[in-house]
Image 1 (tube, helix red, strand yellow):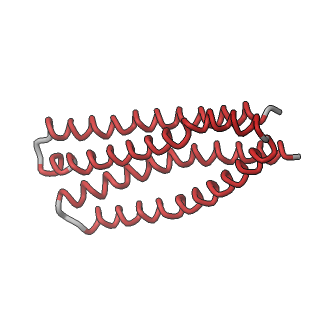
Image 2 (cartoon, rainbow, N blue to C red):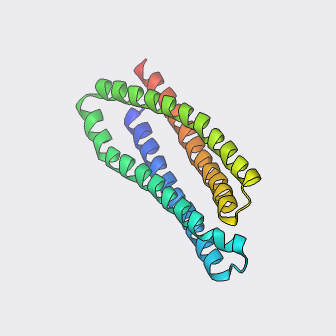
Length: 165
């Protein structure tokens, strides 16, 4: 097993995920523009700013994925060629920490979704409901992004552990 190839494939998959996330953010932006231009009711107009904010948050997630993983491609090659055992050890620790962080994310996001659902149920103002609905949509997108990241991270971690032996 070539650990460098596995690591590079993982980093490239993360970069691809960042690009898909950016595409999703554009959908939020387009939705916001659509509500702004075509919205006739107070409820439709209330979605403009929440969708815009959600799009900005997804752009931040995409930027985080991209700028965290793009430099790793060169770093992986250098680190693996310098000392492959230390590289595998460092990556194993990093992926284990990422798995722990993602497990926390998967506990927090459903709580936020429940809170947003309660806002929808108990707030009668159009802006409040729009914020609740947009929050649920945003958290669903984040669960989608993080579930894919988590699956890739777990597979990568397992391959690193197999490479240690």
